Length: 90
Image (cartoon, rainbow, N blue to C red; front, side):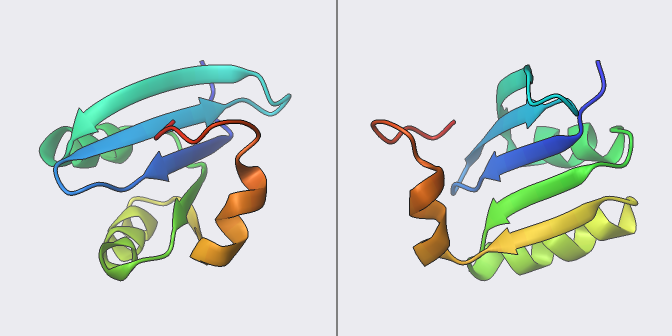
């Protein structure tokens, strides 16, 4: 299981993860607490992590970059086109 891009929906207590491989196939779909998220990302092979930009995203981005990941913060106005159907956290 190689994750190429990992999308994270940031929440107050829970975080939703959705990962794809280099061919765009779903590899992972998880819901983690803050503590478990940090442990999980620290143990991942370096990949691209995409998150919606918000106050907490910048802190997490710096932390994830220290783990060797490439982090992309997406402005909230540009996240909408990625939602294909009804919104859900994944």
